Amino acid sequence: MAVYNKEALWSETLVQLKAELGETEFNDWFVDSCYLKSEENRIIIGFPSAFHRDRVKKSYQNKIKAKLQELAGMEIVMEFEVSTKKNIEKISPPKKVNDFIPSETFKKNIIATEEKLKKEQHLQLRDDYTFEKYVIGENNNFAANAAIAISRNPGTNYNPFFIYGGVGLGKTHLMQAIGNYIHDNSEKKVIYVTSEDFLNEFMECIHGNKMNLFKNKFRRTNTLLIDDIQFFADKPGVQEELFHTFNAVLNAKNQIVFTCDRPPTELKKFEARLISRFDQGLKVDLQPPRYEVRFAILKATAENRGTPIPDEVIDLISKKISSNVRDLIGALSTLIAYTEVMGKQVTLEIAQQRLKDVLTSSKQSNLSIEMIQKVIANNFSISVNDLKGKKRNQNIVYPRQLAMHICREMTEYSSTEIGEAFGGKDHATVLYSLEKIRGRLAIDANLDFTIEALKRQIKDMATKM
Ligand code: ADP
Ligand code: MG
Image (cartoon, rainbow, N blue to C red; front, side, top):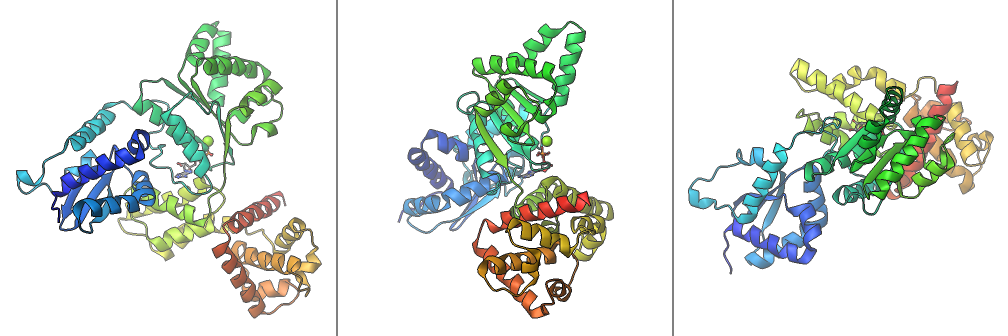
């Protein structure tokens, strides 16, 4: 049996992984990892962020495990931690100098981390809008991975990169994560502007006869991030300037990223040539996250802020707020503030009380069962009477069950009251329907989306009343 010093074992594992995965993939996930400590058959490895840690765990755990076992000739349990240079020192300092002989990889990682820490923060970018803090789920998976690819190789493949989606779904965060990554890992210049700032600066330069300054700034940058470009609608002057800026940046093989609240083709009052430019690169959309992702975002946010929030409270917020991430985090922030000010953990009761307004407004007090029935009937091309009736055809039973489920989620009505409103069905029938939908939710990944989309329509309708 081969007996290895665990640190050497890890170094060897890395060497072999690198050979198997290739330089690029290896660098993406392992170059910032570091050996932390080991005990008997356990080895603990640090990754620079929860994002890295989870990714490696998900994609490489089995491979690494097999490799460790092969090399050590015994089963090695691997643990993943989030650890940067700062807390490496805190974790079990070696008892004897000989216990801990840093390998070359390890030293290189430490130096790389220190280099990174030295770089100054970009003035226009928020330092917390990073990939590490961006939770990835199926709602933003493609967008996030494209963004990561672009930040590693800006100006090459996906140009322009066009991110679109509704309010509070993470467009600005993702865009700035690209900016932060490029700023931290290269010498390339990054400019981030909101469309409003771009317009104001443009107007000032025109009036002050300083268009040269404007052109030099925006046409010569390596990375141009312009946020919320729907703002340029019906503003032909700045659209024209944007068009030329765009061409200059693209011709110089520099990267452009736009965000927008809708896809390019739905932009109104935009020059056709601009729309076709937006359309020619890579377009990705962000969808509202489903429950599991909402939960993960809240969990990560609480962790990042260093404030423990009980899971049942996170569950409550994740269930009740589904429309956008900003509201979700807003509710959490209220509770984090409470915890900090009061110096004690929030309980489920306190959370319910503190968030009463938010929770009831997302339960939409002016929302009626009738309204929900209308929207569902409409979407499934059946009548409200069908929903309330007794027909047992599947094309009616399913929307009926769905409607009951949504009533239960969006209103405060009891299952008895819901039964009443569906043509006087009894309590047990309603419970059976709710169970059916729960069952389907567990196996059908798309159903959550369908339900969220229906809820949005219902809320829309409610706000127009
Ligand atoms: P948008 O620009 O689409 O309106 P933002 O990027 O401003 O949305 O996001 C709103 C808030 O939600 C920000 O605090 C952002 O950090 C957070 N957020 C959005 N998506 C995620 C995500 N996937 N993971 C973590 N935080 C997120
Ligand atoms: Mg934004």
